[in-house]
Figure 1 (cartoon, rainbow, N blue to C red):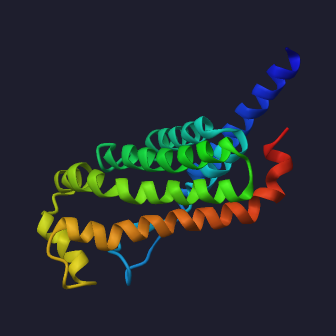
Figure 2 (figure 1 turned 180 degrees about the vertical axis):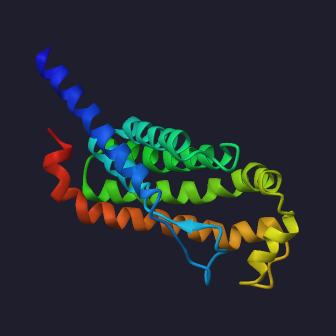
Figure 3 (figure 1 turned 120 degrees about the vertical axis):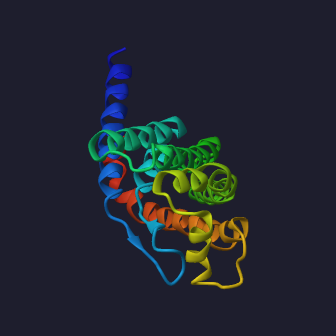
Length: 200
């Protein structure tokens, strides 16, 4: 019984620590204007969620994603009526839960990589309907920018895109997948050195 409580306490401690790191990493973001409009920025705040999903289980990856976004809303506030934070939570949850779930089925580097790649792919695919039906329409209302203006930002990079859907498929899908794979690469680089801390 004492060992079980100690293990649970350790998991909660690691969850809290990774959530705090994920929240801090949200502030370290930068645009890549040559590849995607500048209002979309690259960050690696999904990395701690991936670490948590592998070390503690898929549900903990989701919990870390949730706490990260709650901290974002409480401390920094929102400029998108919480749509951006909900979107970030869904994307991070899909990514980390999928990776952790596949890894738990048979724990190996191969299944960890498979789970992470599948998670990144699902995240990229799901970003299209969420952005198309929810996020971008909400941004139009929140920021007062017409949809034509948003599409124009994409057309400044690639004049051939002529609709929001084509913008999302051509730009956002590969960007989201590559963003996820950067987290995967970093996770594989630091997981082993951090393993003594992550595992009791």
